Picture 1: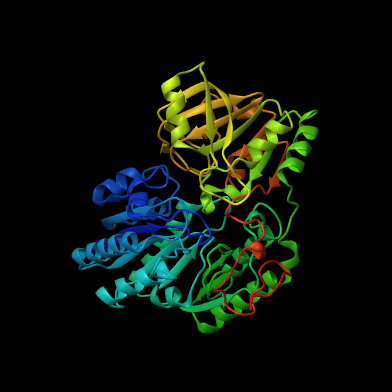
Picture 2: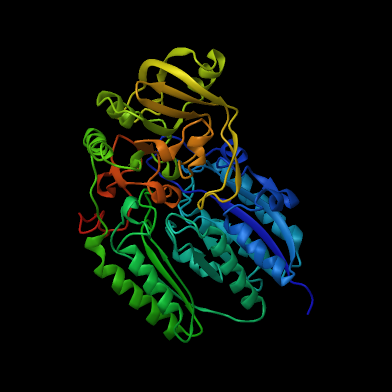
Length: 500
């Protein structure tokens, strides 16, 4: 058999339509902290070793001896809408690259599933539809997607198979790409899958979607058991990204089977469990002051760090990673041996670089994204460490990856150290403290600007984890957001109010 010729492309953005900053074309050129926009063979080199869907699919391609045609990969830090210019330039380049690669036996796409653009509600659905218009329906298309995808029937219709992550924190991104490539191989060998699509009737708060906790842990265990049934080919449960204001926002079940009955039965069985689990998708949330006081109380006798999730300013969910609510609470309560990161403030980082290690600088730190209830924190800070921002991390979320964080600094005020960077990156690896001289294992309190991904690398060292709701654009309770475009009847939180 001749080698299969397969085009590879990726276009990844998680859109929080309530966030303060849009994703411009320049944001995709810069990338998501570790992978800038790349084309052709450069794409294969840059993703090597990284925990990404495209790297996992490439692993299978090497095993199967495919002829890989790398087109383009683009990703940007989660934010508000993708600008029309950014979408049109990147989507046009992807479609043109795929057309130029013809003839092809298959197409693999690494997407997110929650992209909303200035001019389009369903970015992924539009991209796949344009690919279909250009190449037709004879070439199979397999897609790997983020667990937080807000999936649509349009995407389901135009892609032959769509495969979602099964872990949050996302430690299986590469594995998901590998699974999507396995299914693409089956499609290229002539298999065809029946499809079933089910929407869930309530939004799931992002902090409680963690697959290391109930009820998500049991739901994914059930999913894997259902996938072992005769006739079931693949199943995915997308918990959804509950901050994208369009009709298809929310959780979904996708099932693929050898027959329509097999796909429908598996989808209905998993949906029934998700429906029954609605009340369990909730948890305790502290105010900043409550959270810091509780963390200090526990830290008094703890042998390991108490970790606080600054969940509403998560740069992995559209936050600008610069709010100061948690910093104020730490300082006001005289917290000791505490650290917060990563706080995004290029101006502060450059001021620290200019002053040098050991200097005291008076700055207004953070608070520049105009979040209601938030403001810059003006004070004297001691510059404890500096970095150019190039650092390699190797935790379970990012994988073995070179991070490009720009000029960075560790600033201290009293017993609190702040890790400041010039690029927005979710605090999901202990190395993002270490590169600025902060040893996370020896801290009493760590405040992470992250909702769940940090758990992959920080859970093993944590005494306990608290979730705090300081002002920020990623609402811990989706019912608090000013929704306008959801589908009628959708509950805005578990057992919560109904959108109308």
